[in-house]
Image (tube, rainbow, N blue to C red):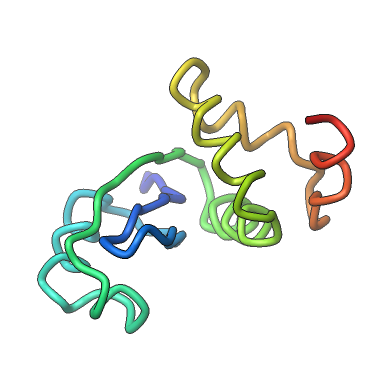
Length: 108
């Protein structure tokens, strides 16, 4: 059964890019080869800074959406937390289907 991943890249210009895939290594290589998303083509090299595995494509896409709703400081905080706890668990603290920016801003 395929696994789906939501990943976060740090781009050469300091911005973050978030996506989902079934093969993280291959996808990061595609981004660095200029064959990934249009956003990353002019921002190479990119570096994988966080990755979370999910059972379904829907879960991975949902996590990507929720992460993209956050402010940059909130994203940075979650990525730092992922250095200690599995990124999947860090992302699961976000409420499903909501843009959680307000909750994280209040808590941290």
